[in-house]
Amino acid sequence: MSNKVRIGVFIPNGAQSLDTACADVLGVMSKEYLSAMPPPLRLSHVVELAPRVDMAYITTPSQGGDIRLTSGMVLRATHDYTDAEVAPGRLDVVIVPGPDPSSEFDEGALEWLRRQFATPGVDVLSICTGIFVCGAAGILDGRVASGPRGLQDVIRARFPKVRLAGDRYRWVRDGNLWSSGGVTNGNDLMAAYARASSKHWPPSIVEMCLMLTDVGDRGQVYGQRQGVFTAMFGWQLLKSWVASFFCSAGGKDKAA
Image 1 (cartoon, rainbow, N blue to C red):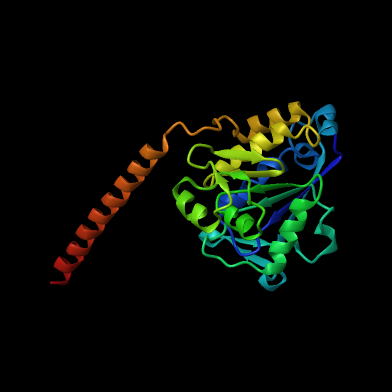
Image 2 (image 1 turned 30 degrees about the horizontal axis):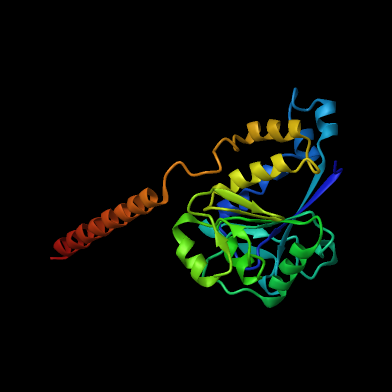
């Protein structure tokens, strides 16, 4: 059992705020967090059982210290990928939150991710469109992966060597690569990863902290078939188009 879990949240080029926040599911499972809880959660044997969890927020040297997330949030980076403290062999887990899918990535950043992935004992956890970072780094080739349900065709076209399963699964694991579907499916992935990682966390700590954060109850398989999902999404697009037409017509009437 680990005394310390070293986690790097890798954001080379911005990310979705909700994708990034799922890292806190693992951060809660820490000696630091539980030590700050009121009794009875701060019982000495509970705190003693939990590992320390070190979180590093890693970006590219060109990005600078402030990482821009969606909804106007700004995250202060603790490291860039050239820092020795986050070199391959210094982390246990690398979380990759989802950026804008059209982003282009620093080759040095992609090489850093490839080396992390190839390091024995390191798990890479891709959240939502983080699959585009992983694909650009070449670590999806021949692997089963998830990714957002609505972008399966885009992912398949860009990375034809990946074996996509995101039309059915919220998250999947293939060796040391874990990947999730869209946005808050990252919480489901974190819960599944913690439950499978007895080398890092005792099961009792995992389940107690999942109860505290109220995640981990949704199944791995989507309850709604892909065809139904696509049809419902298309229906909402149609309704939005109709609404925009009436809004536009209303604006013209007021102008007249």
